[in-house]
Image (cartoon, rainbow, N blue to C red; front, side, top):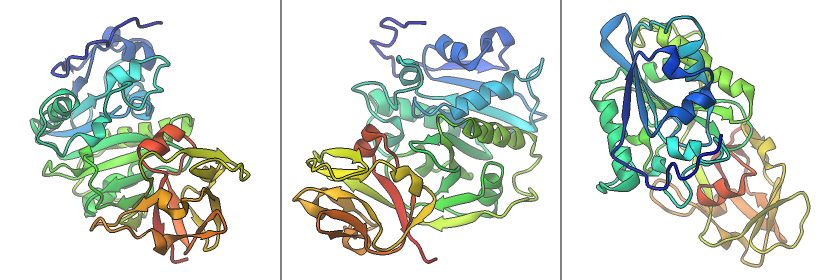
Length: 351
């Protein structure tokens, strides 16, 4: 199906509400359903307890489909809609980016903004307006919890991210995965907002991995069937990783990937960089090469916006090497994501 000019002029005030949608509305598969949407869409599913509501958001990034795939499966798997323990509000966010051809391949709409960087602002137009609409749609149901479903830009296992650790956060995490990252980073994301309830991001794994879609589905199913998130009998232990750093390129630095030093300008990371995801890189491990600007190609800021790069990386001739043992996650060989967002996240490893 080819969309011609469907989103040439985006109405950022538009939002569609669907309550207990029928099979005809939900279509035969998630692609058809996505293409039937004209913009951000809110789906309300009635639960046994109509006094409480849980919120699930997905497609804040248009190339991260596991949440959409899992939600569509959960809504259509049986002949009737599921009846969860509480009401469920589902918010499908960046529909225009997701529908842009090729389908589900654009993080955000071309020449647009990453909406998951637009929440911490007083701006009220364009993508900032949409972020505020999403925030208001969550606030208006006074949710018990908010689960924001994503995919990682590279291959790797599923994990959660939060800004505060509580028993409820650990219990909710265990519905989806067994690792959570406690983050104090402020990047304008949905997760940083105050909804007076637990909120966590679930990174389900690679967008191209069937297991990622299964992780999202099983978590949604368990969330729907959980009678209380406050007295949930957590069945699995959750590993907590505290306060990661974002390893970033400085502006206008060229990025390449290779298994050998090709002498490229800027920075060259090993093309196998994703193998480090949720593994360890030991001190003196070589992960790439740099030009004559050396470490000045990078920045690694702490909570106080101080650059701590030299604590974690050093040079061996023109090789980029680890100055200490580190744990890496969300490393990607996607050049666009690595350049626009970050090369990867890291914490010091004590193994």
